[in-house]
Length: 187
Image (cartoon, rainbow, N blue to C red; front, top):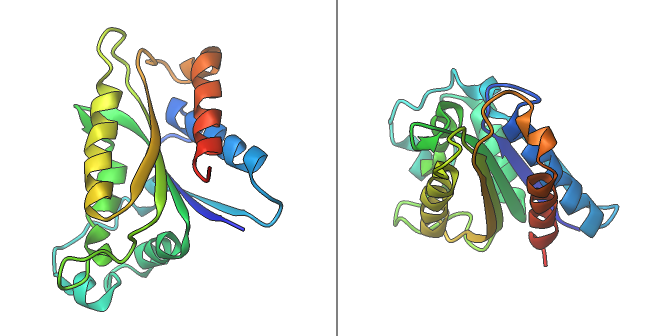
């Protein structure tokens, strides 16, 4: 039995990013068992929970100011795997994902060792630029952060050239690749 947390960083439901995340979920389900759990969190719901850098999270192991953030952080601590899906905004992850990640001090103990070491992750991101795949750059940034926390990124997918809402629906190759990422998460 595996537990997976999916962080969806787009502010729009049914966005290109959301569709990629859903394809990863399909892949996880197709390769898993009936007892597996997958919980998806739309981070737009937490965008008002801006970290105030009080520093208590590292000592307490939770955010003392935003219990709704602590709830999701605890789900990640309990999970075996993590899926992070984000659009690319100005060569970086979305602000919704970044706001949530600012609370990841919770994952570091006082000695800077990780509370979530040993987990696996897959990353999906997309960008509008048709020529340059800035989504791969974002995935690389996220992988560095996860490596710091001892989380192994088993695969990532960066899709370029998806500008209008729903464009990814016409890109069967990318949707299939996202499904394959889901299958790879626990192999």
